[in-house]
Length: 133
Image 1 (cartoon, rainbow, N blue to C red):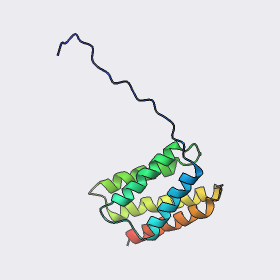
Image 2 (image 1 turned 180 degrees about the vertical axis):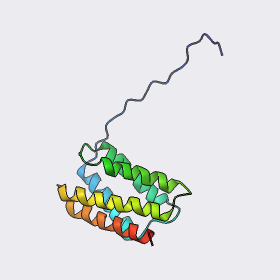
Image 3 (image 1 turned 90 degrees about the horizontal axis):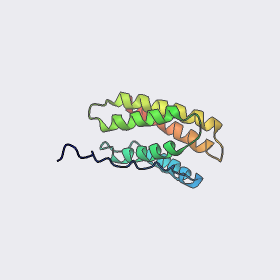
Image 4 (image 1 turned 90 degrees about the vertical axis):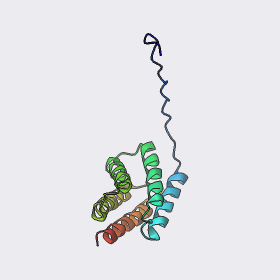
C-alpha cells in the first residue's frame, strides 16, 4: 500500500432513535414475566441473554427518568451471564437489585404498568432467592 495514500475511513452510521410503543413495552414485560414464572432460564443462558438484550434495547430508547440503575444492572447481569466464572450468589444480588428497582419504578408507573412491574419485581426477587440457596 502506498504510504502517501489517504487512510480510508468508514463514515459513521448515524444513530437513529428507536421508538418503542406501549404495546411493544407491554409485550416485553409480559414475555419476561412469563419466562420468570416458569422458573429460572436454563443454564446455557440463551433464553435469558436474549431477554436481557431486548431489555437493553428498549431501555436505551426510553426517555423516562430514573432508569439509570436498571440499565446498569441489566448490563452487568448480561456480562455476568456471559462469563463462565460468575457465581450464582453474584447473579442473585443483581436480580435482587433489579427486583427492588422494578418495584420503585412500579410505584411511579402510569399506563397500567404498575401491577406488571410489581409482579416482575416479585419474580426477580424470587429468582434471586432461588439462586442464593
